[in-house]
Image (cartoon, rainbow, N blue to C red):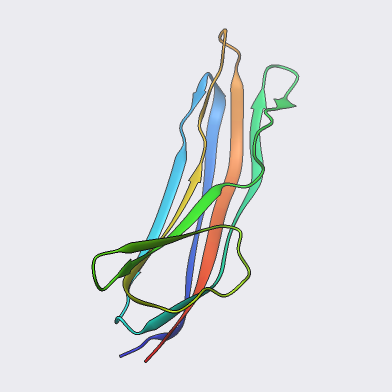
Length: 132
């Protein structure tokens, strides 16, 4: 039986107390089984607040302000279809049996022993519709 409207949502707060020289990447995954009904992806997005600061001057380390996000649909024949964020345009319909939303944020290792600090919140969501 088709599930109707589905929202995938995931959120994490990553903080590291004290100065460090390496910050690990963050990978978030959320999944659900679908019924092989006709699935439409309506929206997929990712967000980040906060970030990494370097050195005694607390200078922000500059790289992408948005985490990488991908939504995978697994189809009846074993095929995989994927969608990249951000997307606010509805997809064509697919007969999917499962969906996985994955959000990834980069890690950083300092050069020359520079100290790093971290406080970041990473999250995202995807909206799907599954009908008969």
